[in-house]
Length: 431
Ligand SMILES: [Zn+2]
Image (tube, rainbow, N blue to C red; front, side, top):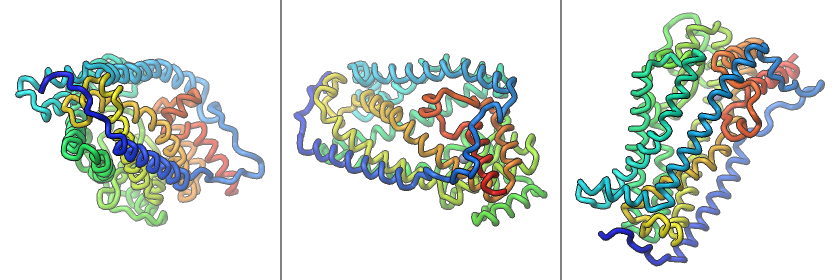
């Protein structure tokens, strides 16, 4: 095939259908988010809400340390984000993406399948390399503050593993899109949208089995009084668990954390080994009670279904965008079935994920607050909850008072000060 094929004539009806599907799915997404997000959790106590005050959660020295850590890291994170988008724009909005796909596929005969697979991997690897110095700088900062315990060998292995998994899976996803567009030029976006939604569900289900073991080892929490207490807690919560797993997080970090992943038969509660080593039992119970809150509300499944709906809406929008002649001309590709389209597709993905991040975090912050409420209702021990939040905040160097716009865009949890104030409200309401 010759270079710089002209865009195929647009099919206005098929495009309008894709736009209509995107709008309808987008509205459905907004409605689902509005309905399932727990916007209001606690009534206002008679004496008014507990003020959100970082000074109530941390000493001035702790505030200063967390703030200097955040101000060392934040510009680098932001630069990395902008740089990543810029690389993506160069490959997506100029002919560089198409040229790259042709060049890397040439030694293998230049067929469209190789153009898609190697073109995708090339763009992602270049993006990773360009932002690598900033990632290394971030690791230096985390080392300097004692948050990272990871040697540079393990750091390099982690970067290579995550880049490899991401590039491999993304290349297969892009290949599926291009193959569908070649098979069904008018309706490919509906098949791809359904497929993307299904993949989000399958991916979330399999994540604990396929991805997590690439980074950590997991063992059952050792038998003993704590384990017995946590299982009793799960029974009282109405969410019995088969096991609580401990991850060897201390290989990388001193941070304290726990999480729930998977759903159905892959659902599991994971606690960092750092938590078991350093926190008293009542604080560990508070952490696990929070995770049980996620189990009780089936938050992983809810998030997965919202993600699936979002993926369907996003791919439908892609069906409309990839019929836009000016965009295709700019990227030097003939349409979504062109093997050289990966650069443009990846750019649109990048923009989509940038736009959807604040929405995901908005929902996440409310879901996290609901899990906090579950922890307080279950343990009825706000003092242990507040002590645990302080301990996590200090150890993880969480910025007690991040700029509002930063918290809005990137905050997946309420701030520590907000969580401490929330526990204060709970205590007021449960004298
Ligand atoms: Zn949580």
